[in-house]
Amino acid sequence: VANCFAQSEALMQGKSLAQAQDELIANGASKEEVSRLAAHKVMKGNTPSNTLLMQSLTPHCLGAILALYEHKIFVQGCLWQVNSYDQWGVELGKQLSEQVLALMSDSSVNHQMSPSSVKLIEAFVQK
Image (cartoon, rainbow, N blue to C red; front, side, top):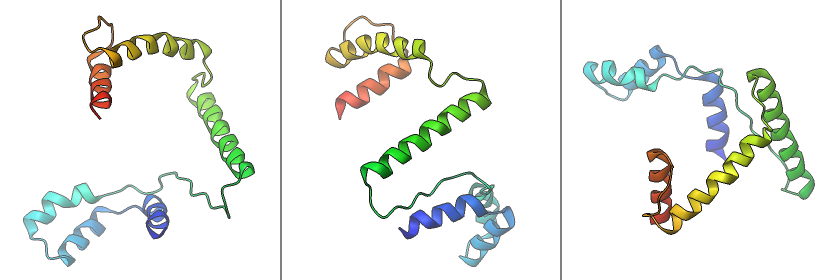
């Protein structure tokens, strides 16, 4: 739980380059290490996040969480001018799932899947 709250704080506060450099120096890093590593430890902060607390996960609470995220997706779609509930996109996914299922069963099957999708499917099947 402490890590959960700490992550919320990290996303909100971030870490400046000066803070990262000071931290590395305090931990005994050499000047070369500081110049090499400090930029990688910078976090911009002011990053939006949600931390939800509830007494217990009841059907009512779960429904409220689902409604919250459904509304979030709707609003993001409006802002980004994307139809978040595009039924034709869902239908395309259903059509492509036939190829995916065939490929999951037999890796030698003829398909039109991208190399990226094929690698994802292969990695999943191997587990």
